[in-house]
Length: 92
Length: 29
Image (cartoon, rainbow over all chains, first blue to last red; front, side, top):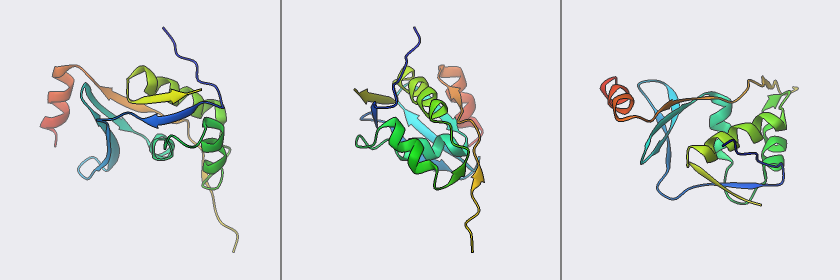
């Protein structure tokens, strides 16, 4: 089943999930009971903003300060994949 | 000076979810 996340959905990191930086791989990782996700730079930026307050659209807007050409659909798609991995919950 | 923004790259991740994959991930630490 594919999860679809709207731009007004508000994502937050689930309890028991830890976001950290792996010094050896020089990559941001998400540690959760079922496994490990190794994030690229933009995915790490998205995850860092999943605070349970900002919507997907707000996150895309905030990332516009750091990156040129941010695609809100890319953010929504990533959040949907993270929901599928039970790393993130969404309200709305 | 104007701030230089980084180019947006589609966000992505690699997934280590099976016990074997997680073990392989940990072994490289």
